[in-house]
Image (cartoon, rainbow, N blue to C red; front, side):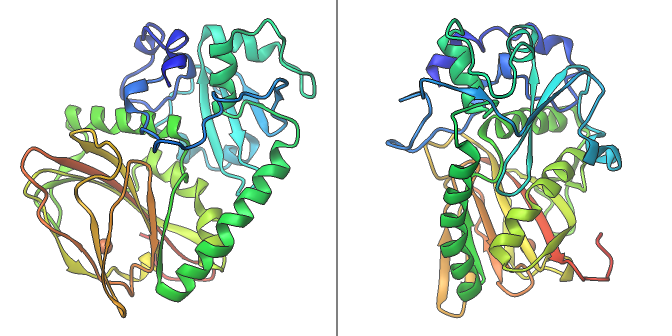
Length: 335
Ligand SMILES: [Fe+2]
């Protein structure tokens, strides 16, 4: 990420956006909140393709305008700051949308790009990298490559899920959006807009169906369907930010949690990779301990696989989002 520093340095434009609203301003990313990659993992910045094009699955919309499919579901954007131009990048595999806000510099670059034409050679390398990381710029054949990659992920993951009732799954949310979510919820907790304590723990801040989490809940539904091996629909989403001393006693979830994803969103102190607070699963083959790094998801059958966490150590905080889904034909309450 170091080479992104040239673009995303001073937070001057961020200061003009309402701090309590969600945004992911590409020109001024909170670089310190982007999860670290494991050593040796691929990055576009090493070996950026010579020719990059405006992604045909990227829609750039002016302030206030949203993709047509979201017009009918504007409530999913209640927590979004819509005062800027936003590049909405659709993942060709699951249809999920990744929104990236464009500040003055990047907006000027992106609005000049034509679909199918290569990005100009004069485009600075930091900007080229940043736009490629966001998949606003993509090499030729990007969608076809993604479809192959995704089918190679789905096949083994769906099989493990079918056999065991759980499977770890990463990359559900773009790392830039993840960094923006970390900042957004840290701010909300500091401001006291997220309440402390619920029936399961007095040591966690919680929010039920919070609007921004709800947006991502809908975006990853197709990925969960693919892993579950059947169509699912979102039931409810729950944010939980745990304080040290919190504990999650072994339990199974209610029927609204037939298919659940626990996303590891934030942790302090900043973990190198996996956090020190694993999820424990009680499976027919015995106890399983699942360590998660920031951004990792665990898909599991919440109603069938008992799960728990030990006491969170002194000086630690941990934030997760629980995305819950039910079979598409489920007719009970979704709350
Ligand atoms: Fe649970």
